[in-house]
Image (cartoon, rainbow, N blue to C red; front, side, top):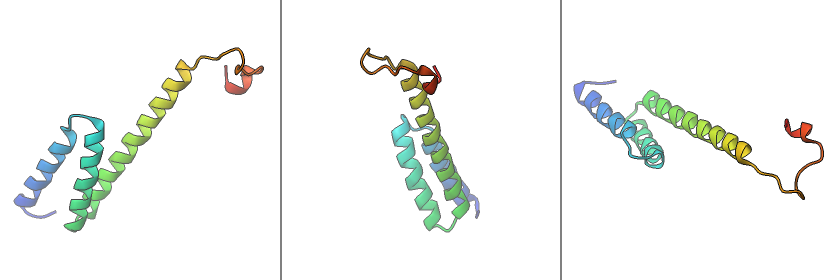
Length: 88
């Protein structure tokens, strides 16, 4: 990793990443921090940050799809005749 100076710099970057005010800015900051540490030659830090970003994005998509599925209302014209196909 390096000396105490690099550890302090990494700690400051990680604090900024996890203390972001909203998800969008955190994901944007995460990619810039990952790129910064990749350029400095620390591939593992970049990989961990990108993996965390992917997990967050995937989890967010699952939650959104589940919310849409639960809140879906059917009109008479679009309601399928066989609801067993949809699991309902």
